[in-house]
Length: 385
Image (cartoon, rainbow, N blue to C red; front, side):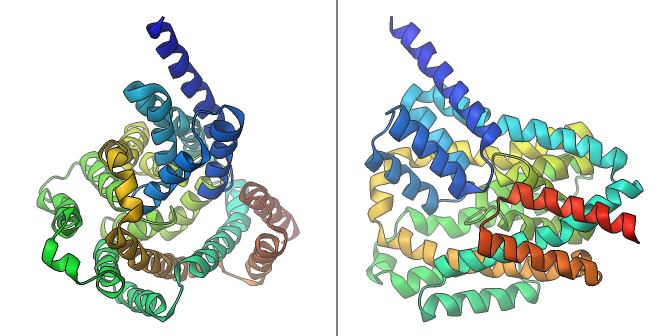
């Protein structure tokens, strides 16, 4: 009987998160809202307080919040098999759709029709990035100290400082500014965050003698998945520096197109990793990039599950997050400035950008429809000129 119940719970988890992965457009907030409706109100798998505890924990650790929520819920409802099943099911639809779009993009993106589509999509993507920065800024920059951290982080990003170090220094600054100095004498597990994350960052450099692009791709996305705080948009700050600037695997234009694909597909924004991996190393690259960017989320959930009550009450954790959130806004803004020249090339693209900003800020249009609208305007432009 217990075995039958376990299998039923596992199938329920798989079915639910396959469905959510296929229909959840609109970013992490929309994904979490759908999960709350399904697992709290409709199915009663968790009560509201438990759900909020899990949500708070995902906000205090790196990784994509919605994916980590899916993994947490799977574990609560169906144990260890549910943990793996929920995360994989939530990621799978976006992976398959991104893979199909990658194949289409590589074969048809360079054709006149493909160029016309992305001519209109790119300004819309810029509008999405700018509005995300604005909304995150309203939430993250509360008080003069957080604004100061954000300004300094933005200046460091413009000067070429490494994104990982910016996030770490901002987090430490948050601890020093907001947490009790007594923490420095006691020492906690968070004190290990700096050396550990520094090792994660330097690990790919230590393997610099490797020329295999697939290995470097996997190490890069493993680093990103382990260190990504705040919005999934921060992914593109890492890509801008390493994949575009350091390795030269993608152009600025291809990065913009990858962001567009992330907005067009349901599920986690990090599904853009599938698209990028395919552009860099084909089918194998798509698989390696997707696995590497999401793998740390499973490990993080396994490690923090028992610590959730303490994390919510930890002043140190909350202070670290305040500093990191301010830096996240700065990094997204710095990326938007780097991409602006590639996206806004003439008067038409300025008009599309403005339309996108109004649609998002005034009418809260879903990003999927906005991207499709940008593609339509791009086609109209190609017919008129």
